[in-house]
Image 1 (cartoon, rainbow, N blue to C red):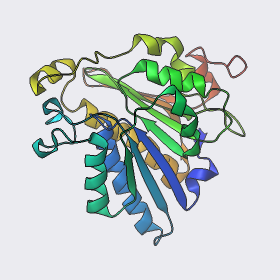
Image 2 (image 1 turned 60 degrees about the vertical axis):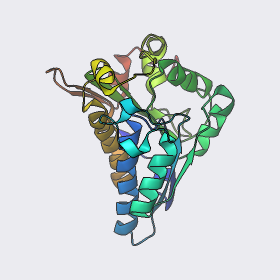
Image 3 (image 1 turned 90 degrees about the vertical axis):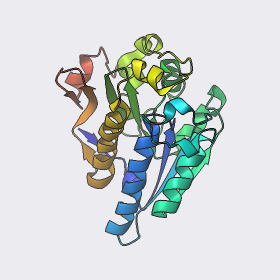
Image 4 (image 1 turned 90 degrees about the horizontal axis):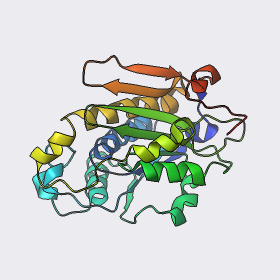
Length: 255
């Protein structure tokens, strides 16, 4: 079982969402609704600050499969979602259009929780490797999806003060380098949908949001990996314990 660090249970919580595209645009909306709801449930005591990071702009191919509309084309993805959620719900949202690079990885540990919704397996690998020895209680929720399936992995960004919940880098290692999507920009919605079925991004966002909700609302989570598929295969969750992590080849004594 993953037990939430005290930083997620305190009155002020900071969340960073890296990538506000197909999946990130949906999960940010859900996180915004959670921020609004938790503030109301606690009579204003719980304040969740949402930070968005994405250097890309909305294109025609995003319309219809991501949480964007024709009027958003050409605008910053992060700024569009920031403006929409902050005005609609009155919660704190900030955005940055700076590209996440190796030089800025160290800043990730200052957040209480980060959510990565990026196409690049290499970037996820680099984040995990760079911060593997950093002592911090920041939790890392990574969302990855393919044409009709995907997974959500929950773990520590680095090494927790009292233990280690393995993250996507710890469990998948070098296979992340083989998992990069085709990053060639799609010129149309039709082309984009040949690479990824409609609804996969929204479903991935919903699965990731459930993990975040459990951690912040109830302070614990029974699983650390959540696999899902649209192709008829059964969904499955991997328990958050050493025996389950060992099936990935992970051993805390070797990592």
